[in-house]
Image (cartoon, rainbow, N blue to C red; front, side):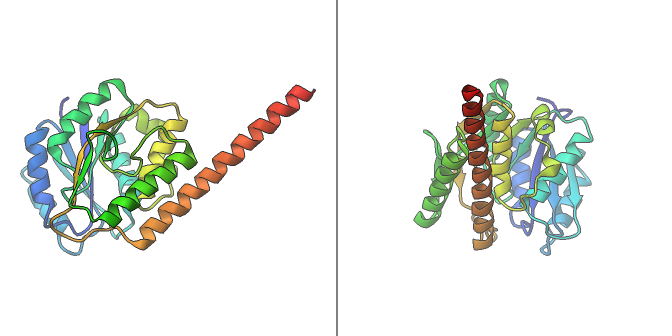
Length: 252
């Protein structure tokens, strides 16, 4: 993997306490990667710190946006930036330290036989560190609901540590994604499965942030639940139409 093909996307909002350390760890783990920080005008100066670091690092880039627009919108902007350039492999990861750069080489290796690789907390070998029981139950329940309603063959559709081929990103038409929050992660997996992409899960250890404030909120959870339910109803409606269509053909 060379710098000419690999781009790590990191959306940020008020992550000044974490971003410098994360970039340093990424440099050590995957030296050839380019990094794009997509900052939503962080009041704490995250963008300014990245800009200063980028002045001495040709592989580090900053995409500044004028206001906070949500995680999904940040990723869509980052993918568009990367597709306009030469990148062939895209990595998604959080800025808060919950995704360990040291585990990234394992995800990249799995891309050999996949179109989309998911870092999974909820398969054998995966784990979560320092999460309260309530948060763990919410994630497990949310993933179970998503898997059942959308018939997704994965255990962790909501995780944000993942790797995609350029061709996969191009097939998914991410510019049409309306999901602003964490439901973006489910949307991507859902689109990939429907497009016939090869999706592989790799176990990771997810570590709760030590610095800064989590962006998870009741409104974020509600948006994800609402969107997943809507996609599930559309899927069920399509299945019913297919059954009725098949029955009519047999009657003719």
